[in-house]
Amino acid sequence: MKALHQFIDNNVHPLFKEGSKLEKYWPVYDGFYTFLFTPGHTADGKAHIRDGVDLKRTMNTVITALIPTLLFGMWNVGYHHFNAIGIGATFFEQFLFGAIKVIPMVVVSYAVGLGIEFLFCVIKGHQIEEGYLVSGMLIPLIMPVDLPLWMLALSVAFAVIIGKEVFGGTGMNIFNPALLARAFAFFAYPTYMSGDKVWINTTGTEGMMAVDGFSGATALGEYATTGVSQYSALDAFIGIIPGSVGETSVIAIMLGAGLLLFTGIASWRIMLSAVVGGVMMGLIFNAVAPFALSAEQQAFMAVPFWQQLVMGGFAFGIVYMATDPVSGSQTDTGKYVYGFLIGFLSIMIRVFNPAYPEGVMLAILFMNTMAPLVDHYVIQANIKKREQRLAFKTAV
Amino acid sequence: MADVLEKKEEANELLIDRQPKEPLLSKKNRKLLNDPLNDNNPITVQVLGICSALAITVKLYPALVMSISVLFVMAAGNVIVSLMRNFIPNRIRIIVQLVVVASLVALVDQVLKAFVYDVSKELSVFVGLIITNCIIMGRLEAFALGNTVWKSFLDGIGNAFGYAWILLAVAFFRELLGSGTLFGFQVIPDAWYLANGGFYSNNGFMLLPPMALITVGIIIWVQRARNTKLIEE
Image (cartoon, rainbow over all chains, first blue to last red; front, side, top):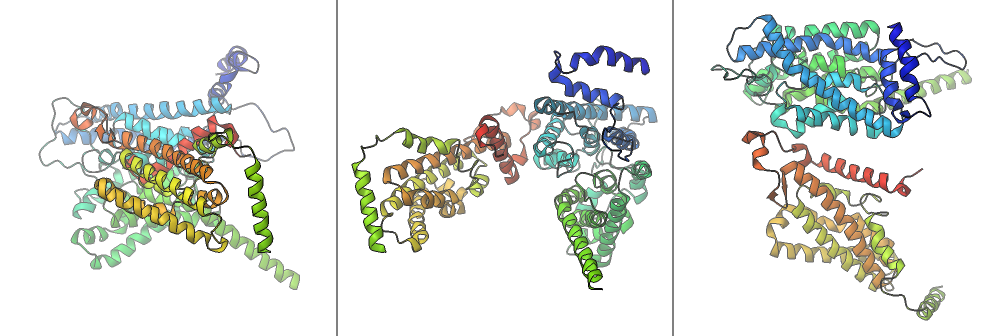
């Protein structure tokens, strides 16, 4: 590693530095350089007490936290594929099939997203921003496996350009870019993003047809349309249910959540309050289920609140998306409110609106919009409190 | 006081009469036509008339009909108000303008119903809502009330064209990407569609109003990138 570092410093660096031929592409070079090595510059004013972890290292931790869901997602894709076409397959075959399906999605997501990001950095002459590293991994994990790759690429382009670059790049976006990509795909190509055809690949092996009586609907989709599901809460907890690539396994997500909480990168306040919000709404639904308008809705409302938490993308959303430090609330009190409402609204949307069986995407995007408002009132309340304290002190 | 004002106005008119006659399309008058197309576009620079730009740009044909309607109302309204500008009491000028615009819109509405009934149904309330189109009221108030008939006419035409080309540009992209058609004709080959074994699928998001807003935003972005004097400090 040291030899490589020295080689780059001596031979590659001069090509890109100011005044040289490739000066224009300095941001691209710098982006790769700082990705490989921690930059050597130090603070030159009075000493700052700061964590040694920079943004690239933070992003890498989040990506590490996503690896369990990615690996599980690959296996799950293969498992359901071979189940659907009625062929026995070994664990290795299942995993290999899933990997062949999922890896192109990851590659396309990174190639398009980073390509656009590099382009903008060269035009603006800015440093490469690292924000896309996590989004690029999140986007394939929240898409159905059968989504055509060009739709994925278009969603990524939309999310990066309209969701991020127009606001000024990483750290300035008001919406979570990964969720924006999903929302774009969801509204642009609804037939490829919802329903019971897209979650399980049945075309990968040539000449094979799905077995009789096969249903590709997700657990949530089944509840929304019929009020019963063939998948138990335990299935959903382990993750052997159909769904977007990485969202199914609560166990894998909890592994990632553990890492994020241990390193302090994700906010435990948001996660905790989102779970509390989800539980609250679940309990309310359980209590009012007898008064539901239709039999299906009544059955959906009567789903035990703890089962609501393990189905669909709820766990994935609150662990990896709601905790996005850029688009979420910044104040501690605000984080409780923000998280609580995400959990609350997710369950509400998924039960009340069968057209959108996955409420967590819309709930998080909605709360992204509201986060600055929440912060504003938290700050105003604090100012008022301190003013009163001051008035009290001066009066005494 | 009123006497003094009247005398002053008479004097002004005499003064104008004495000036050499301006050619019909002098440089100043051409500017009235050109400015709203780019530098002072009613939609992308003044950000007026956005509602209709979002609502009726799903397809090109209704957008074209809407543009022509607005062109007529704007030009005629500007001319009429400009003709009356010296008789309109200042305190009720908004009401007078509204009456003028409303009668013109009623006229347009009847003509549309008579000759292009389908489009008229598609445009529904938005023809009636031309009355409240901020661009029209804005031009009457800001320009026609204080300028001669010919200049007001040019201003009306210019602004209507400025409105129309944005409308048509937005509708072009929305119809092409959202429905795969232009003016109702299939442009994207049928064989391309996924349902027919191809790879393509229409973008349903383009048919929804948010995408119209984003399209207008992208046009503003491109315009400001090319025309740097529009960028505020």
